[in-house]
Image (cartoon, rainbow, N blue to C red; front, side, top):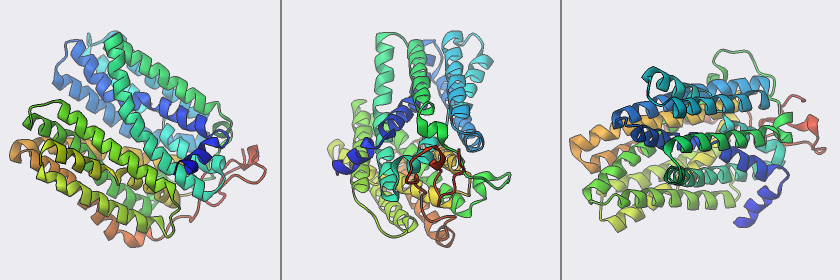
Length: 419
């Protein structure tokens, strides 16, 4: 298992691109907790903290596909680094100005969110030219999904450490400065500098003109909804058992399950259409969420949470392959960014629905939202099977034998334009 991942990391530029992307995404992965801690430290209410975090999330959802399209049109360095700097400046403005002016505080988080660089989609566009074979690219997608789980586990811990050592304002400044350095590391690399999107058909819908991509996005809205509802349901479960630490155990178990599932999924070579495989994985994901409604004792619930997480990273990794196959020519970064946006909006919807569910029917009902989200995701995939069966292209492109500047391409049957 480890040998396959080491093979990827030994490829030239691979470790740098993966590390730089993860570091560059730290501000986005930790923004919500950093905003809440900063708002409370400045005397703001939980309502204000939640509103600012929600505005940031909405702004990010709007900005990702727009910046992804800009990357496809103008290249990575000309978009990623300026966006990272502007996003960091927005958070710096919030940290320095505080809440003397609420409109300014909201404007700051809007700027930070809208200009969050689409590093995630950018990395997936670079893998084919860096790794050179379809099998290795697919394994890199799985490794990418696993690495995300690590980041979302370590990131909040880093924020709380910075808060304890200095202050919430310092945490905002340091995390975003680190994020700019991560983006800088990526855009200065040779693959990022030489990558060019394939020539694209001018169309106002961009990547969204692909019916297959729309079907996938519809499904992953509900996957995001399931995951978002679990964060609220976990808090309610912890309150029922009178221990805040229970929430941490549940979230850690969910992340551990995803890590194990992603690692195992990426360690083997899969045959057959990924669209069919995705339906099976999402069915197992939904099946894993349903037992959470039983809300047993803490030990049993922690085990159920770990099982529920096992198929999350494989589902995400497989979705990357499906995105690559259905993204219209010249829109790969935008298409991946739409997946990020849809998943995030779904998670926000799940959070919004799970809260009232707790008040109306208790903790079990909030976990039922997760189960319903998983089932709905599967229904979307099953009902759009014919659409997903016709990909826009059938394989990822790889770097040519010379490995030079003129061979850097995006996914999709050699569709890249010479740099």
